[in-house]
Image 1 (cartoon, one colour):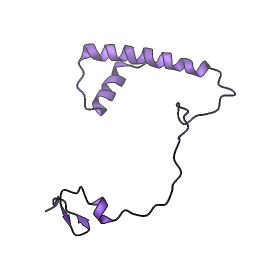
Image 2 (cartoon, rainbow, N blue to C red; image 1 turned 90 degrees about the vertical axis):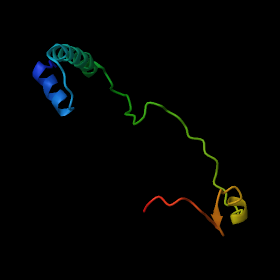
Image 3 (cartoon, rainbow, N blue to C red; image 1 turned 180 degrees about the vertical axis):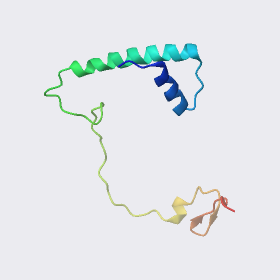
Length: 95
């Protein structure tokens, strides 16, 4: 796919970028060569290859959920900088 100078100027306009004439020519050539290289992927035989949503094939190892008794507010609030009875006290963020 050949990218023209007008294409680069249009993309620059959409991106709100200022590109001078020398860079416009350079970018047109670079983008054209990149797209030509990517176009080679059309020739790759992918028959028998399963589609993947992620390139990293990992298995997530999680512990089993075990229901436990809550330790209560005395334990959970023991390190709170400020508290009001059984609640955290935090600075007001809206006026």
